[in-house]
Length: 357
Ligand code: KG4
Ligand code: ZN
Image (cartoon, rainbow, N blue to C red; front, side, top):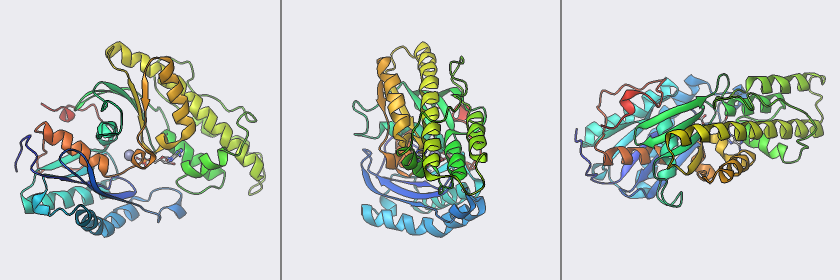
């Protein structure tokens, strides 16, 4: 295994930690040469991700997706400068599929392998060339808002992440999904709920704002979710009028946006105490695609002299561009992984093995 900061060619990245099967090829400079994401629809009728279905789907689709992006990028495996896969945190079946596939290619073609932490990949997306004006230099504050994670992280350098706060119950995307289910919307629930909320009156239902004003920057969503459930339960089953569903969706979304704004205020304070020079607030993860959440965070950032940035919606959710980009950052720093790196269902960002020596 080579391990140097000379990157010999484009990098192939694979993502298979949850229900998106994705592959991407990035040039040494970070230009996207080809990318593909396949969102598994087979989970929809279960209202959530079924791990065994996800693992089988990754196994079925990853080889074809890799062939497709390699052909599109016009790169031969032997000419790659590295191959990377999300290796945690996530569903272990999918992680095994992706990381084993990447390791197989690395061994076969004598390429450096990078075991990418999926959360680090979300965190570093902002540094993709051309995404944020000025290139998102360290340090910056990240709000990672997805179906599985909800945390505030001070991104202080490559491999140097300090978690300032996290959810004490549900992740925010999970709350969107559960409320969407109560309202009879499809899965995943965030996008249809946002569409429905756009037609509703956000002021009609007074939902709680959990932890608002409380010290620190942890999150909580279970009280809000229960409040919505109680309102919905007052209607006979299957008899929730469309108008009322829209008002509930709008009220819920506004409560989430206001909670986000409040928590972000506290997080910016904690971040600034550690990093007085930091001036960027970044939001990432699937929920970062939500316009009400973006607007609320942008307002808080502007009031404190911070620039606000969010990846374009297609790079907010799970994708392989962020995996290949993270591999490039790590390879530039000479930090390839060992081939015996085991995929991990749990892999917090602030663990010692994230640190780049
Ligand atoms: O980052 P992601 O694709 O996968 C995880 O790592 O979880 O995030 C998926 C989550 C789902 O819960 C989905 O409902 C939510 O992001 N989501 C949204 C929106 N688009 C996706 N939530 C609110 N508004 C949206 N527009
Ligand atoms: Zn994710």
